[in-house]
Image: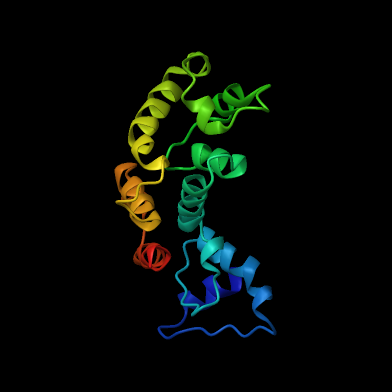
Length: 171
């Protein structure tokens, strides 16, 4: 990354990076994203590995299967909701029999969360509840997209590529 950054300072053209195989790029592309170095990698990033898609994938999974604990925890902790680790642990502590969906609707569990956690979870439940139960009127894509918009997902987009990735995911 430091070599790339140095070359970018001294050139007005493009830089090409050659690798033996695509898996070698995984770490490099992650580091370039962290350093906010723009790159164009056609069909190299797996859509499901991108941060903006991981939350949409978790949302899709919870709508498909209410008992998908990992997807629920990822969604609750992710930027669309942003529960703290303390609130998340408080919510699920000693609860192995109930689904996360049952826990987030349990008023006694919500009371033990921080005020901020209660507020965030209350808003989340209000937005998500109508779409968790499969509706014959809306497709899965429509439900995911509506929830994402209502949870202010577009505010998390920082560049054009993220928006394109999200559009590809919805398609």
